[in-house]
Image (cartoon, rainbow, N blue to C red):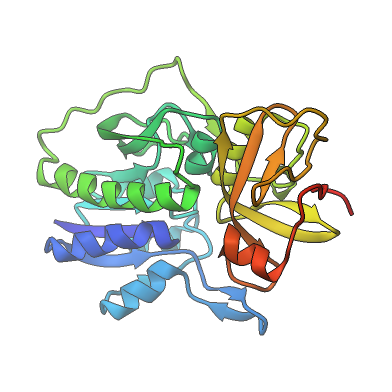
Length: 308
């Protein structure tokens, strides 16, 4: 099919690759404009722009699609369909209507659960047993359109947002190819009114760990915010990112304080339960497993996490 691709971050790249490998004619790739990044604050193209240019595809990155000029330019591509995945701009009705088959969105949740900006983070943080990918026919509302295809996957105790992100991206790439192959045979299924939840954008204020909470909830916070923005706590006044963890079946030793390291390694007493920290990161350094971290920065049993 002749199509327009609209996406911006890493999550979208495998989908673009799959469309090209399947032989679809990508008339243009739309992504967000380059943004200042790095120490020099030089404009850096998005992952989708970088990949599209490597593939020799036409790239457009308008600041907005609200102008008649931008809408006319998109319509002039004469695309049969647009594939949208984590693009980052709202699509006006004129854009939604321009391709003959409209716009299909690849959304990383089992709609209507987790509409909005951060469905992967929120699913882990909420303790959902499963999540998945939906291929949705886009309409003006926020992730409200009917669903054409869906596929579920279990959320395990080992999943972080990074791991689940990669799995769902690959699932989305496979699912959109199925949808395009049978576009005229698919039946749009309206989303039910019951079960609607919204995945609000992650606020960095959510990232600090409060050790007085339940170990299960803190574990979900750590895994759900890994790798970005990264849950964190203070260790002897140093801000440390916590990137992976596991809940232990034992209860904290009698007399252990909240946030106290009780051993072995980085096992921490929470308000309820014990949490083992498996992967950490110091400022300006790479992520490290627990053993490597402790070799470079010992944290003795009895240390109180979270204190300045």
